[in-house]
Amino acid sequence: MLPLDIVFHLSYNHHMIIFDSSTLILLARIDLLEIFIQSFHDTVLIPEKVRIRIYYEEREETPLLNKFIENKKIKVSKVRNSKLVKKLMEDFAIGAGKAEVLALTIQEKANIIATDDRNAIRACKLLQLNFTTAIAILVRAFEKKLIDREEALIKLDKLENIARYKLSIINNVKNHIEGGV
Image 1 (cartoon, helix red, strand yellow):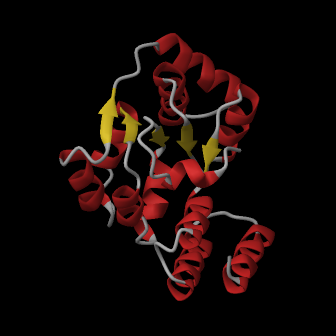
Image 2 (cartoon, helix red, strand yellow; image 1 turned 90 degrees about the horizontal axis):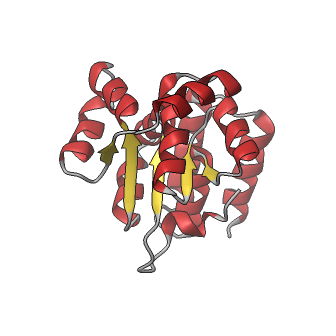
């Protein structure tokens, strides 16, 4: 996994992060997406399938996600290689949206994928694609002092209630946050 400095870097190098819908939704639900978007100074990208899912699934976070897309804070891109998408779906037992995220990462030579999906993470490891998760973004936001300890623990608690992280991961992150940086 790529060191998460890339997620909140301040350099002029062109970096790109491609999100799947689950990680976007998790960050929005714990009120961390806006902080991330404001702190990440390069391209945040999603494939068309993720855009469609966000647009048509009426969720509490849909208006916020649509606002970021309309304001071009989150850009939408079309995957050109539909055969690759189908192959990724078959090889890794993932849906079309996750497969498009992987294919778009390859197509755009993106630096990192944001996904919390177990099969997509397995695919990233096998394809040697760098990835991050919502919980890793939360930790990095705390380390970069974008959120304080109390806020980080509140967001971690919310994440524990809505995501499927192992208890050991939650406890390790809680200990890290409580112990400081």
